[in-house]
Amino acid sequence: MPLEIVTIPCLSDNYAFLAHDAQSGATALIDAPEAGPILAELEARGWALSHVLLTHHHWDHVDGLPGILEKHPAKVIGAAADAHRLPPLDQQVSDGENFEIAGEPVQVMDVSGHTLGHVAYYIPQSAAVFTADSLMALGCGRLFEGTPEQMWRSLSKLAALPDDTLVCSGHEYTQSNAKFAVTVDPTNTALQQRVVDIDRARASGQPTVPSKLGLEKATNPFLRAEDPAILAHLGMEGADPVAVFAEIRGRKDNF
Image (cartoon, rainbow, N blue to C red):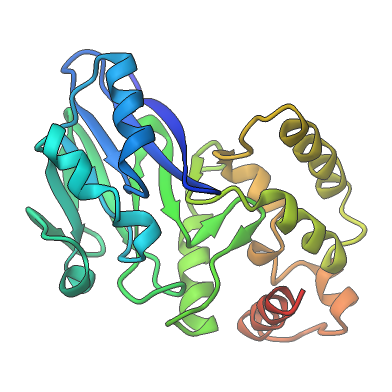
């Protein structure tokens, strides 16, 4: 049985996620932007938190943790490389390590770029990856600390996962990401259809996160730095993918 995944809107545009195993009752929280909505969701479902997985140290991913731990004294897991600026961790993990939640292996992936020490958590049996501010729906996080090379390597690592993987990212930025995406990939019909779908979802108050990795690979320009149509549009045929990615990221920063 795959884990049941629940998307929880927090703050103005953040998402936290619950991953719940009905058989054992184990429930993991991925990131803790604010306590209120997360505690309300746990209470409404009658779930007790067993684990908290932190992706990176930014305040809008960790500030809710103290209030949550008061009610749910769960095991807190985060990156060893980021431990000096994360809340206190019960378990420090590194790239390539595995740990278990309800008997399911969770793979730790270093996805530095947005920050150094940012990790994603991949749960292959449930076909889900929690990427926070690395790979996002139709986008990727700003490079606050890492280099374009680091972020391209991180995104390439995520893109190598199976297409049916659910990408659980950290923000509702998809509509603005879509407006930018069409400026660098204007002839992509899959992207044009996705824009329509996104606008429809947001108009009815639905989240656009999570998304399927296969859809990201077909439409997200930050995964498509080797795509001939994008290279032609940018006038960068034959350019190194890192240079193309850097160009796309720079354009998005100034969009």
